[in-house]
Image (cartoon, rainbow, N blue to C red; front, side, top):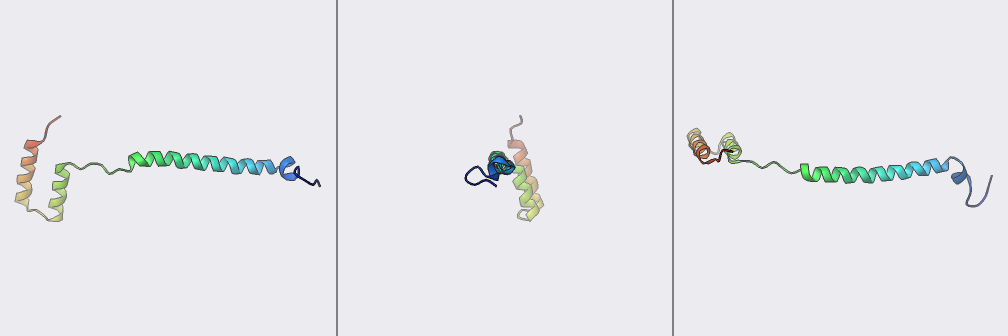
Length: 82
């Protein structure tokens, strides 16, 4: 058995354990960075257009069927067709 700095952790299989810890740390940081960038852009809610909001209001019962029909007709006339 050796004494001092060059013990079994450096000359034996101990370097393999430290190499594994370093790889785990680097891969964890890399994975965090990648998922942060991806979710920062894809985590936003999609923008609702006027017809989606109108459908939600009708589904919640805030407007009557007649009001829904009038508003939908008015919206379909004012929307710009691509």
